[in-house]
Image (cartoon, rainbow, N blue to C red; front, side):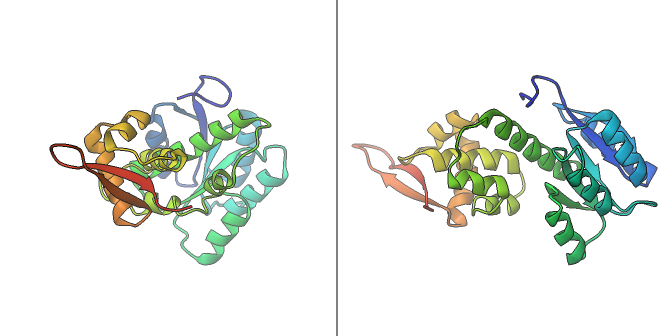
Length: 236
């Protein structure tokens, strides 16, 4: 996967006051291709110093730190020289105030502890994909549905949040993005070729999108055999 700055891995700073938890999260990152751990920090002050020294692309930021709280760290990042550093908040905090404040301060993702490797991997890949896409757009104008996707405000974000077991949120984003681009209905085979899936796998994603009502299925009858299923994004 290409990186905004070339072919190098996306660097991640792990911030958690619990050394064991930090080690677990570090292991999650190390096992994901295209990402590398830039370092660890266990206090807010260490986190700010590490960002200054290491210039990571992404910070996995705990909220409960012994000196400077994670939200204060996030606020300082947003108002300082490293405002372009993406932050994924990783915390046991479930209260509305913390979630709301994290959003206001520009956290890219929010993960509630405990979480699994796949949960973190999906968020990291989503953030990296957004970084890459924005970096390659330059001065090019974007369409409204693209801006909505960047900010997670369109219906296409909902399918990724309610996926059945075995479906990937990152792959679902690719499927949805391709469907929205098409002006004509497509088959599972052609969609699979576009996004790098087998026909069977593409059909699973399409069937889920049909089930939740964001994709329509049409039948095309030929001279012989079963009708072909064609799929079209159902929302303007």
